[in-house]
Each structure stands twice: as C-alpha cells, then as structure tokens.
Amino acid sequence: MLERSAAPAAPLLSPFLVRWLVAAGALSLALRLWLSATFPITGDEAFFYWWGVYPDWGYYDHPPMVGWLIALLRATLGDTTWAIRLPVVLLPLALGALVAWALAPLDRVRAAWAVLFFWLAPINWLNVLITTDTPLMVWSVLSVALLLRAERRDRMDRTAWGLYALSGLALGCAFLSKYFSVVLGLTYFVYFAVYRRERWAAFALLVLCALPGPAINIAYNMSHGWSNIMFNLYNRNEGESFAWNKPLLYLAMLVYLVTPVAAWLVWKQRGALAAAARQQRLLACVVVVPLLFFALLSLKKVVGLHWVLSFYPFGFALLAFALPRDKLKTCALGMAAFAALHVLVVAGLYASSLDNWKNTKLYPQIIRSYKTAEMLQQVAVPGVELMASAYTPASIYGYTLRKYVPVFGPGNFHARQDDMLVDFSLYQGKTVRILRMDAPRIEEYQPYFDSVQVLSFSQDGVPFYAVEGRGFNYAAYKNGVLATIHSRYYNIPAWLPMTGCPFCERLCGQVRCTKQKQ
Picture 1 (cartoon, rainbow, N blue to C red):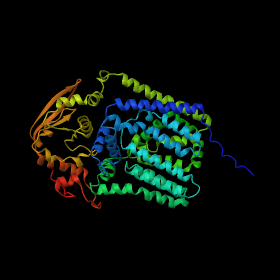
Picture 2: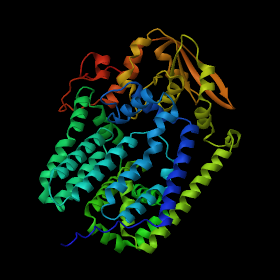
Picture 3: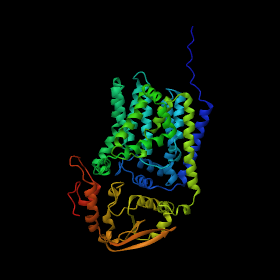
Picture 4: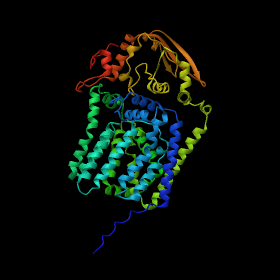
C-alpha cells in the first residue's frame, strides 16, 4: 500500500523578514497611537464628527459610512478624539492582514514582503486622521482580497460563489463610503471582460450583491436634492481646465507615496514588473486600471493624495511579487530610511514650541487648533448664538463646544451639511456672534441685523474677531444669502427625479424652487 505523499511545507519566513515585520508593525502603531492622542482635531475630522452625532443614510458631500462608524465609536468607546481616530490607527494592521490573507496562497514569502513594504510607507506611520477614506480603504481592500481568493478556486463550488458574493457585498459597502469605489467596480469589469469571460456569471453575482449600496445612496439623493451628485459631478468641477502641472503633480505624488527608492526600483525592474503583471492579472488590474483612470483625471483636476489610497496596498504587493529576491531587502531598507526621515521631522515638530512658529504664516491656524477652547471662552456669551465664517472653523469650534456651530454666509461648494441641518428661521430676532480670523467688512453683515459691531480679541498674540449682530433678520438673510446658495448650488437637472430637498423645502416650501429673489 502506497502512502499519500505529504503536502510540501510552506516556506519559512527569514529571520530578517520576521524581525522587520514585527518592528515596522509595532513601532508604527506606537507612533500612530501617540499622534492620535496628541494631535489636535482637524477641520475635516471635526466636520465628519457631526455626521456621527446625526447619523443618516447620507450626507451632503459623500455617502454615510464614516458617519456610521463615528456614531458606533462614540456609542461604544466614548466621545473622545482618540476613540474616533482608533480605526485609522489600526487601519494599516488590518489592511496588512487582508493583503497577507489574500496573497499567501500564491506565495507566502512574497506576501509577507508586500505587507512589510506597505507598513514601511511613511503615510502608514503618520496618518491618524479619520476621514471618508478610512472605511473606503477597509471595504475596498476586503473586496479585492475576497476576489483574489475566489479567483484561486479551480471550480465554481459553493465556496467560490460565496467569495464572489462577499466581494460584491464589500464593494457595495465601499460605495457607501465614497464614490471612488466606482473605480474599483470599473477595474473588476475590465478584468472579467479581458481575462475571465468564462466567469461572467460570477461577476454578475458580485455586481448583484453590490447593488444595495448604490440603491441606498440613490434613495437618499432623491430625497435630498441629489446633493452628492451636485457636489461631486457639478459644483466641485466648475472652472476646471487642463494644465500641464496637474499630471506632473500626479506623477510626483505617486513617487512620494511609493517612496523614491521603490519608484526607482520599479523603473529599473520594469521588465520583471511586466512579467509579474502577466502572471498576476487580477493584481495588475487592481493597480493599473486605477492609475490610468486617475492619470486621465489629472489632465483636468489636481488628484488628491488620498484619492488613490484604497488601491495603494496592492501596488506594494505587485512590487513584492516582481522584484528579484536580492532586491527585496534593498527596497525595504530604502523605504525604512525614507520613513525614518519623516519620523525625525515629526519629532522635530513636536520638540518645538508655539513661540517657534510666531513669525510664520501658519501661526494663526496653529493657535486656532491648539488654543480653540481659550478663544471660545473669550467670545462665548450666554444667550448669544455662535457661528463661523467657513466650515473648517465652524466644525472645530463645534467639536470643542460639543454644540453644532453653523456657517454664516454662503460658504462654498464644500461641506454644505448646514443646508441639511440648519433652519436659520429659528434665529429670527436673536443676537449672533460670527467668529473670524481676519478683519471683517461690517457692511457685509449690516443687511441681516438691526445693528452690527465688530469685537476684537487676541490669543497668544494672534488677533481674531467676532461680528456681533443684534436682531437677526431672517427674511433679509433668506433673500440675500439663502437665495444665492440656491442659485449657486441647487441647479438640479430637471431630469433627475426628486422626492425631497430639505434646503429647498425650507426656502420655498417645495421640493424644487423656482429662481429666488436675490
């Protein structure tokens, strides 16, 4: 009787690789924990914080996932900065685990190198800011990981179908995080159309399981004046035009994100990279299709660094599978040196004092971030409503006070959650103080109050101001400001069906308003 031969043992990770994985994971986690507890809340984070205070099926700018996440964190861990930042602190560890799980069946050692490269990237040492990209990265990487495992199945058995379905479900959750998930869906379509037409049924199941995400978002938009569509497709793109510096900035951003050492090795080993891409076709699609998409977009828009982050880990994975074995350590050492430079800069910044920044342009913003409570203590008066001139200071002031602070005035196309939440008619006849870091023009406020005066304050040598308006005139504000907002940001195409629009309904009592008097 012949004995069944044992399966070949999985290759062991080298002591160097194990030590570096432990060191990179632990040291970067320690730094992120420290930064998350000591770095003041940023404007975007404070803005998203209020999404967690008022959970909904969507918000003006983006789908709702980060709001749901913050609501959960506030309910379970408490209403603190470190608590709402905890997911992004743990994010690199979670993404690294998903990459390892997805790629280990292909090559356990190369998968470990991919995780190490990802953990050595400077952004994974420094990023502690909770944003819409946080859940987007989790769900996108999970979706890709599930699809990679599904594609390893030789037969379409129950496990394979389940993996495809779960990949689609994760893609739908990514859609409820941010619209850049559409690029991942496009990537899947390209992959199946070019390489896996025999599994169109699996792709169809994936898409079917992803559909609840878009369905929720469409229902929200129909009942909220298509705010996501107006912001992402119309209002934020007005005036955009081609400029040569935009694609050059995109290229420079990519070099920075992968680190100069890795970028140099990509160029030197481009033949090996192409060969790896031919072998790992899904992995290559997840990297190449988004890069090409954003390259085309960069011809007209400046591509934000955070736009590519949900595809970021798989770039390092493709690199780890492509580099010759003798270049893997070289890449890791170079990336570690680049990360160390960033850590030294952070250490230097934390070693400095506020006085060291007095003669810089950043000093007023630094004071606003670090001395927010002291500033508000000077301005706040019982019975007086506090507002701000823009969403960043309004969000920061509101976060500090744990009381929502509206934006007075038209604002801009970003962060118009006030349009959903604030009913200015409730301030009729009241006294309002509008905080500003710059000297206000009193004539801009006089039409909306019975009387107006400018109050001057100082915090650590930084002057700031409050416009105090007594007897707020809602009718004048409605005609002068709210009507302007409607004409700028609510030119909703007639072909889009609507079941509601909170801003329009408060403005004119209807789902769609005709042109308002200004």
